Length: 207
Image (cartoon, rainbow, N blue to C red; front, side, top):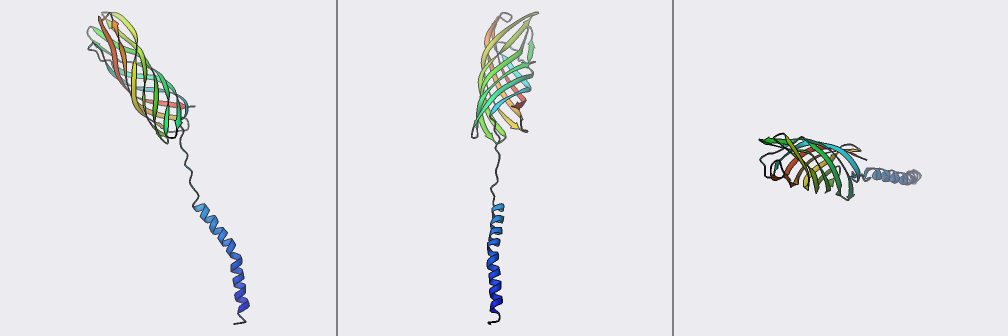
């Protein structure tokens, strides 16, 4: 037994010396394995501008015409973000080809614009929003070769979804409903206004 004691003591001393290194290696491996993963959240805040293309259909007050057609336009806005809540404002100008003829009248909506608030909930790079505000635009009536146009104010509201697919780019799908107040048209001897739906797609660049 006495002859084996120096060997046993030598092995014990070697193991004792190796323990700090083993513990350090185990701690390093544990830290690497359990390191927290950081997720980047998309930020919707800031200015943007873009273009839209869609389809408009509606009806004219006190007249049987129902203007409808393709509508394209430009928009610009600004967002603020607090947590997942996104809010801001947007303005646009659109140029519809919406018109309809019912003898002897033809009504068209050559242009309209909106000034709206937007608010919604962001799910990282996806934004679901509602919008409402002021609408303004022009209606034109043609009868017996005579043309008469009036500008009018009204209101607008809608819903939409927007997806950011690149660092500065996002695409949206949107439905809005706008109502332009009645104006008196000599061509129809009546007060005529326009209520219309617009479904469209849009592409925005975020600065």
